[in-house]
Length: 253
Figure 1 (tube, helix red, strand yellow):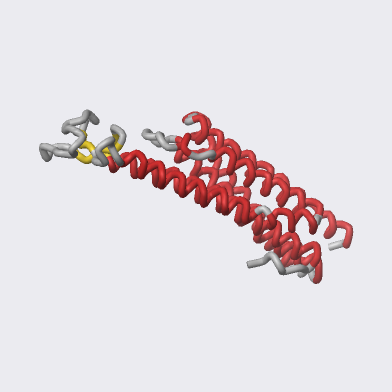
Figure 2 (figure 1 turned 90 degrees about the vertical axis):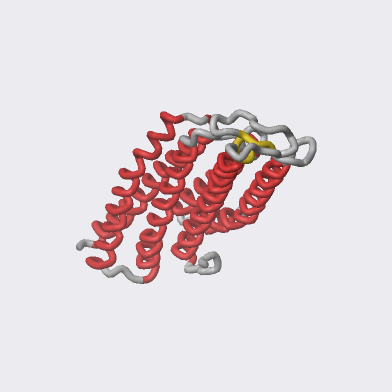
């Protein structure tokens, strides 16, 4: 293949992955907005779009393989193609996590979302992802390091949010007498605050069955975990871009 055509193929790969990243970011933002608002229509649109995200991932992965197999790039070109191969995987994973957020938005019982600022955490994570993709497009080593520097911030935000959910559960678990109540299958209180039950009901917290509340706790904790993972993928993209730009492996792990 003539050199000019080879360079054009490398540039086209970079452009295609950058465009893919922009669309994945949009999916992530839609998933986050669906969760924040309880928007079932938007949530279903995010879930349904996952197949297209996966198809594009496979096509881009194939492009990387073709360049490796047919052109046998070396030095910085080899680093670029190999890193791009890994970056599309990170982006596909972000698409999966966006789908998770859409799924969480469809839950019937959503009491604890307001207890933590999921949108605020998501905004920080999205900024990291945007910076990482911009760094990839421009081979910007300084921007790569800036993304990595924010990882501890996201970890701390997620840790505080998780602790808040646990404290919220503990606070809701106690009635004024420090006991839980009993609730029948219809959700009505079937015993007084001493926690005595006729045996037909389940224990309840704050008017909810324990099982329902724990399901909601698990859902919010999973959402927090998924936001943290998006941040991790942004760091991965930055680390692989830094390897491409400066042959620097310090951020790889």
